[in-house]
Amino acid sequence: MTNGGKSTLTSRLHKALPNCCVIHQDDFYKDQIAVGEDGFKQWDVLESLDMEAMLSTVRAWVKDPRKFARAHGVSLQPSASDTHILLLDGFLLYSYKPLVDMYSHRYFLTVPYEECKRRRSNRSYMVPDPPGLFDGHVWPMYQKYKREMEQDGVEVVYLDGTKSREELFRQVLEDVQNRLLNRS
Ligand SMILES: Nc1ncnc2c1ncn2[C@@H]1O[C@H](COP(=O)(O)OP(=O)(O)OP(=O)(O)O)[C@@H](O)[C@H]1O
Ligand SMILES: NC(=O)c1ccc[n+]([C@@H]2O[C@H](CO)[C@@H](O)[C@H]2O)c1
Image (cartoon, rainbow, N blue to C red; front, top):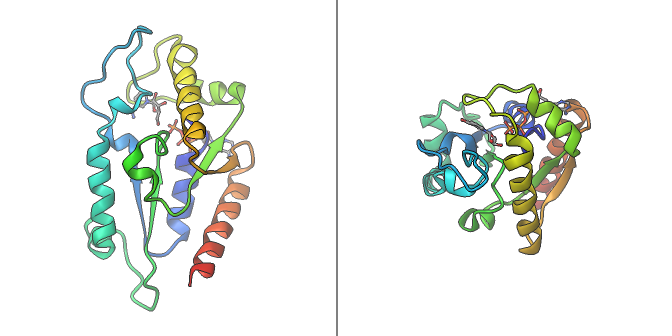
C-alpha cells in the first residue's frame, strides 16, 4: 500500500543482498494521467502505469541478469554465487496478471488507515496531492485492488508496516535467505 514503507525496505535489502537489482513501479507512470469520475487525476489505478514497459524490463532481467546489472550500474560479486535477485517495489504489483506468477516471493506491507494518511500527508510527490485525494481516490482504490487480489487468490506474505525499519529489514532478509538456502 501507499506509504507502507516499500521504498525504505527495498533500499535496505538492495544494499544487503548480493547481485541484486531493483525496479520501481513508480518509474512507469504514463505521461498523461486521466481525470476520473471521482474528479481526481487517477494516480492510483493500473491504467496510469505503463505495465507493458515494466513487464519488458522484468523480462530483460530474467533473460540476462548479468547484462541487466551491468547496464544499471549494479556491481556483481566476482566469485561463486550464481544467484541473482530482482526486487520490485510498487503499490500495484499484484494486480497485473502477466507479472503475478513471475514472482518467487510476494510481500505486502500494510499500516492502518490513520497511519497511512498521516505518513502520506507528510510526503511531497513530484505532483502534490490535491485536497481530498487520499479519501476520495487513494484509499478507495487501495481497498478495491486489495479486495480483487484476495478474491483472485494471490498469495502474499503480509508485513506489519508499523514495525521498525530495522525489524522489517531483518524479517525479510532472513526470510529471503532461508528460501534461497532451501532452494538449493
Ligand atoms: N518502518 C517504518 N516505521 C515508520 N516510518 C516508516 C517506516 N518505513 C518507512 N517509514 C516512513 O514512511 C514514509 C513512507 O515510506 P516509503 O517511501 O518507504 O513508503 P512507500 O510504501 O514506498 O510509499 P509510496 O510508494 O506510497 O510513495 C516515509 O516518510 C518513511 O520515512
Ligand atoms: N510518482 C509520481 O509522480 C506520483 C505523483 C503523484 C502521486 N503519486 C502517488 O504515488 C503512489 C505510488 O507510489 C500512489 O499512491 C500515487 O498516488 C505518485
